[in-house]
Amino acid sequence: MSGFAKTLLVTLLCVVVALGASAGVYYWQQQKIDTLTDKNTNLTSDINVLENQANAGKTPATTAATNEYTSRKGVKLVVYTPTKGEQVSSPLYVSGKVPGSWSFEASFPIKLVDETGNVIAQAQGTLLDDWMTSALLPFNAKLSWTTAPKGALSLVLEKDNPSGMSSNEDSLTIQLK
Image (cartoon, rainbow, N blue to C red; front, top):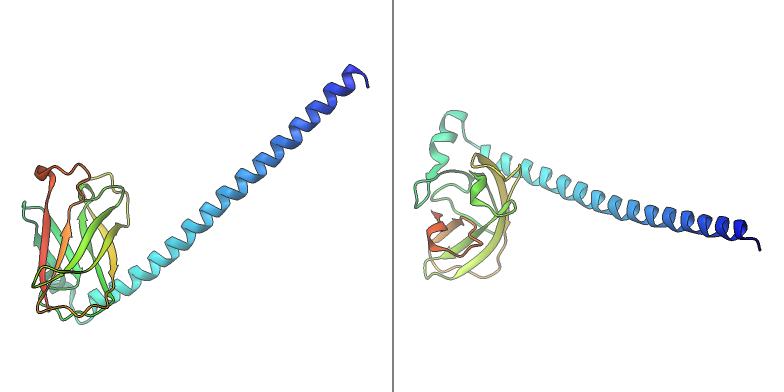
């Protein structure tokens, strides 16, 4: 085999390997896109459920006034569902708006606590928009539990604090039934 033929064979082999690798990366990326599309579809469905729950029996004039809250550090938040004093059951859909700065990578902790301080359920609130802002952004979460709670319940939204510094802590507690 001549030197030219060997060079041509090696070149063709490299092209075939590169094409195979490119196709593999393409299909891997397409799987990621399909997964994100499925998650987006699920979030859209959850948002529709939450909006229906939030708007059930409420007029626009009363919705804003009854759903605005202030955190321990004076940060304005909006919680559409559940409302203060509401009787809740599992699963509990939580929706509202928090500042993007309350999240870390678009999520923050939410807990349901009974009157003895036991955590009944917990989940991550997921921001539904770009979290790199201090503006109020919509979020949702779904909490499920099987343990019978003891007495009154409290919904606790916590500012995510990956630093662990107490100066960065903040929360909002809403009393439920």
